[in-house]
Length: 139
Image (tube, rainbow, N blue to C red; front, side):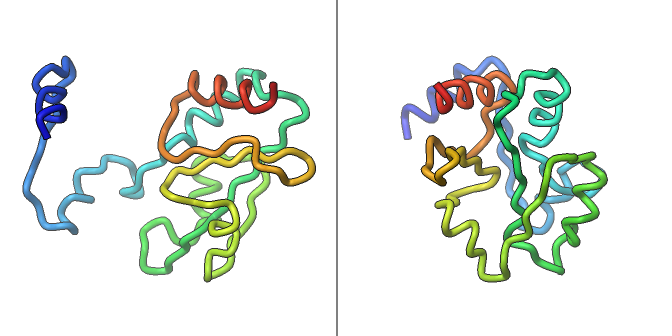
């Protein structure tokens, strides 16, 4: 508790807390579809920079698909976000997510050619963090 409070007080960027109904919170998201697109712009910029190792295959997995969510169907946001790597559609029971050990969104898993997990992480890393994690996993 104290460490969090001290971190908030000492944060140069500030932090805002609000009391909202759950549904109201999502109105504050300023993307066109009302969703967070964590890591997608960074991954696409990484691809455009030419820094992606030639032998690294990147595949998106659409999981936790719900027809009541604003990002349904995934095929629409994949096109809207200009995602050009392959996409795997997970099952309704999220078999791929479970197999990879998904703990949060976004979630990244790097496997070798034998399917061995080299690294995995949940949450955002940003462009530099992605590059560092990939370099370390493939070293």
